[in-house]
Image (cartoon, rainbow, N blue to C red; front, side):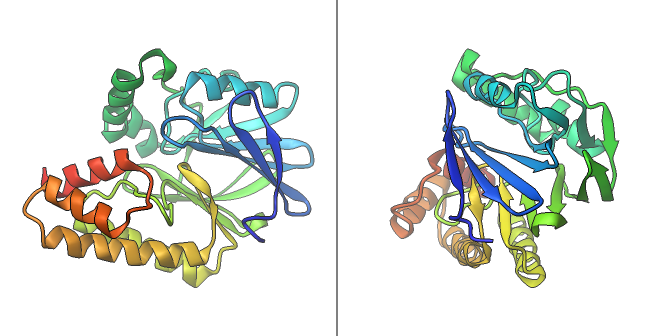
Length: 263
């Protein structure tokens, strides 16, 4: 599957990229919101399952309008637990740790931070979880998913389109890296994706990517560790990273990464 082979539908806010995978279609929603959020809809035989939720009120409204009158079997709420105005009457699925992450863990801290930063444009209401997921296979709306629990929430394998969903990748943008150990964990995860040969890697902050993008990110993470080891503080680190990657977007995430590395 080619990551650039899609048709585009413009929404009231953002746009939808539709990948035709035969029996299954992937609808990738680029919200265009301040956090560059991405939401995925997996469609099979007219039924939909959403992977993640938009969190800004404009994109919540736009995606609700896009799905109006369609049969949505459920929403997998992994790392983005805010935005409960999205499909309020549809079953919400999450692991126990993902639910805790947004109610009292690091996810809640992020939600509070974003609500303070963006005000009423950010929907900080938390999705109520009606179905608890565990490690392994689950079928929702006739579509097979494989749940992989992570430290914070869970990743989702979608075998029918040979794709995997995780929180962040972004081969030419910064992402949240919570220190050297976290960088190593991401590198190991990406190497696992390469070994498995996925066609697409889906993330909630970027368009669908491929294995070449995973290799690029691995090089970035290694360089990030090297730069951090040579710096005495966060500002020096950010300056050095900007000089090394001048075209990268995601300044908010670079600031957060500096905070994790240097406190």
